[in-house]
Image (cartoon, rainbow, N blue to C red; front, side, top):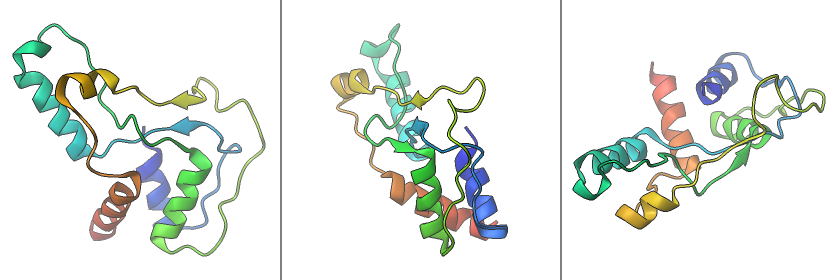
Length: 130
């Protein structure tokens, strides 16, 4: 998904964020370094050969509306997020995308090391510098 960089870009350049719907769809986000670390562990582990693993956060789940509010807070936008009409979500978009990482936890004692707020902060700082 591109929602996070798109939201951050709008919040930095043309706030406030305006959602197309009520923002109740739920997602989990995994910071890139956590995803890469787990992928490397999977690739290098003999016991993982032939196994399938979900790569993701698996612990933090957030609504799109709450993510938008977090981005406003991180960027320093004082205006509220503008929510659209309540719908059944965007056409073709699932209402919830949150992977289970239980298998990775069992095989590798995996737990993400970067929280959503930490990753959001790092991403905003990176986008401000580009």
